[in-house]
Image (cartoon, rainbow, N blue to C red; front, side, top):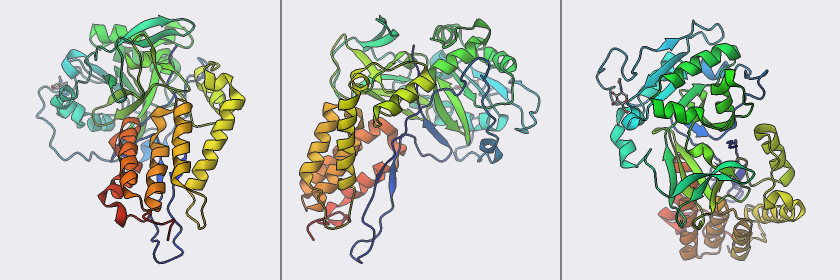
Length: 435
Ligand SMILES: *[C@@H]1O[C@H](CO)[C@@H](O)[C@H](O)[C@H]1NC(C)=O
């Protein structure tokens, strides 16, 4: 069974507290797994629908209170039909008292060369969706080879894990594994009853092109209850995607076959403008090896990871970083110690470039290649802090490459490394620890 989890890394790169005039305060930027964008953000999360009885989430009316207007400036394409860009007249609920709006099913059957897409959301947010490059500029999806089989994976039965993705050839760091748009996107709400929600979501699936709809219904479920199968699939396979100021759940059928590992060999990010979920290899993967991502932040103590996986995904993790709890937690504690020292800008400091190198080694040994942007970043700062701009630049570039793979181009931390790379000698960290 395959599930996706919310993961949030609370790593903050700090800069010196400005006590001396020579050390200007620098904005603190957070290491985060979601993406900042004018009106869309995305992050990975398990579906909140916990049990069949409790399949309704608490209403999050605040997210609807102030839906931002569309920020994309280009005029919408001239409507080719009355409902463009939707293939059918929207199927809507009545105006819901708490939301003060309807929710409707919007389907575009020709989306991305006939793959199709169905969205259940408010009329206003549907306009936001329609104005995204994903709809306005179909060439953008083509240019990035979205929704084409990369040929590097096949979905296979994996002992004890149901289905998983297996590499069909050797993969290198950065190689693309998958890039797909969702079959279904549904706004998170708590106003409809389970039966009502199922009715609308079912229409959303039935309106999809046959192949896409069948692929959706063939996905893993949590409860195996036929009468709520569309919600059951969301429960087992969804990502969180924030559009128009509201949280939506998105199901990417091919990608959701990917299983969890605490030392994953692949990393994902979502481009909210293209609605596309990308997965890349973070270390060499051999032909025949399973391709995995992490459903929980691997940068957590074992109990916390286990708890998250159990609560949200109903399984007990048995990968090596879970089984060897004492050892894993000991290493993790050491990683934290290094990070705290490297992130401390009070003088005197025990932080050295060697310590940053040791931190990188620990990440590698733990199989956390997909998260190397963090120690690479500390290394860039640590080297610059002793005046070694050459190595600092090398690590800033490495941090950039890693963070683009992990968080996409909207992450705040990207700005830190771009800034350092502009001119390391002008950066606040330059020679900071040898002054
Ligand atoms: C569906 O979306 C595509 C963009 O992928 C657009 O070209 C097409 O006109 C849309 N269909 C309808 C019926 O508006």
